[in-house]
Image 1 (cartoon, helix red, strand yellow):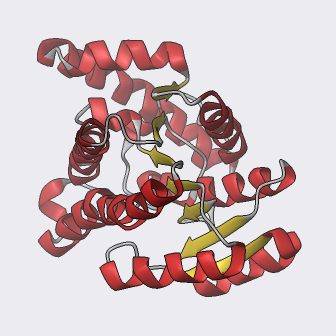
Image 2 (cartoon, helix red, strand yellow):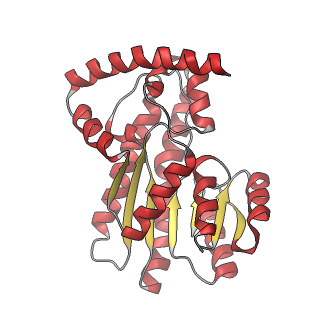
Length: 261
C-alpha cells in the first residue's frame, strides 16, 4: 500500500491502522522527516518515500522505490491534500492555484503512474480520499471545494475509462475531521465547518480500510449525512438556507471550541 500525505492527519491514521492489520505501507509525503519518524515507529512493515504528488518524476521515483522495497504495489491511497481557507478575495491567487493543482491534478498523476503497473500485474486498487465538499460550495473554502469537485470528477472519469480493467476504484468523502487542516479553518473563521462535531482521523481510517476490503465504489462519512449533502448540493436555494443555518450553529460551536482550549 502507498498512502500519500501519510505523515500526518488522516494519512497517518490510515498508515498506523493498515500496519496493524498486516499491510506493508509506503508513507509518501513531502515532509520526509515526519514520514521517516512514523516509519521508524512502525518497524519493518513501513518505510518513508519522498513524494511531491505534483511531480511526474516524483511519482516514478516513488513507485520504483516501492517496487524495490516490497516487490509490488497493490493499493494506492491518494490522500494528500491542502487547504488555504479564508474569504476568496483575501487568499492570494497563487494559493488558489496551488490548491487546485495539489488536490486534483496531483492525484491524477498518481493514478496515471500506477495504472500501468496494476494492469501488468492484473490487479490493484485505486482509492481517493475526497471530501463532503465535493458536493457543496462553502464560503471560506471556495478553491478547496472546487478542487474536491474536480477530484471526484477526475476519479470517476478515469474509472469509466478503465472499466473492464483488472483493478478497482473507491472514493471516500469524509466530513469535518480533527486534523491540522481543521485548525486552519478555525483560525480563518470558516464557521460552517464547525456545525457538527468533527470525526477523529482514526474513525475515518477505519471506514476507509473497510471500504477497501469491501471494494466499495463510493462512501460518505457518515453515510446518512452523505445523502443529505448530495441533495443540498444540487439545490441552490436549499444550499443558501442550509449554509446560513450551519454558520449560525458553527459560530457558537467554534466559540465553545476556542474557549475550551
